[in-house]
Image (cartoon, rainbow, N blue to C red):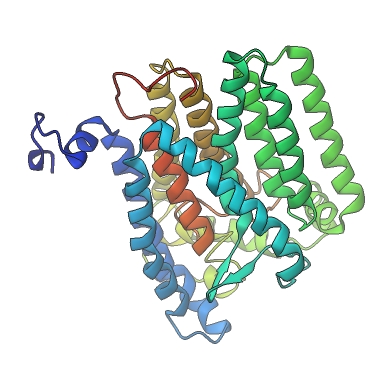
Length: 376
């Protein structure tokens, strides 16, 4: 494909091809391809239980892939300035949806997180993560270079608003993810160690408070430390799947765990991969996630724009942390949390939000002579 564009090609696609991180793009394409395979193998049993036909869920996932690919590639063409503008308007729209979902969204499994728009079930919390990471980076960079603008204060107040809306759903996992990414961005923007410690104490207090007030959080944490104290069915089946798969797996479609795990197509898709593709394949998948994150950080080391560094770091940390939490939960290394495995789990909102977020990463890490100033 490199032969399709000459280095002297000054067209939009030509400039994009020779400036974008093609290795990271290739790794993302591999993850999407693995996700398509797992959708075909992991979802039929769940789809049949829901009365959607054998490949009902798989068809929905595959239909969303072209849209996600177009979104990823389209956003990667943007300049840092347009990434910022797009995120500002996107965050404003998402905040409206986060408020609307509390009043208009149906309650599912004790939570109100989804809202129906034109027949499509949308989860606004998935989109608020990449939008807020970019907007927070802009506010922090603006506060660094404009003495009269309280960037950290404005970003902090915006974070509190988003956290409050997420906790009202309630969605503790997304709240912790947003807080962790924002804390990292604050630290990189020059937050004193004493304030870092204070924020860590606040975050720890929040987790303790959630444990004391939210029964489902307490149940998951108790089950993690003492499997006999709660329902360890899904974790037990997940670990069994990895043992059955061994090094090389039983083969695509030959696994049995998907017939028993309620969330085999989403939260526990990594267990299906372990049983059908084997531990070696799972290690390759983990390495692909690590490669994308580390490759992105390497590109950011050459950046002079504080905004680009903060925004790229936030998006990459979000991507990597989400993958780490999902895989860690599946392997019983962390308490279970309903968080998708990027590009591998079923879920339209998650797929589109991740495609958009990684498209922003590709846009921000493109080689450029100038980004128009330290805040762009």
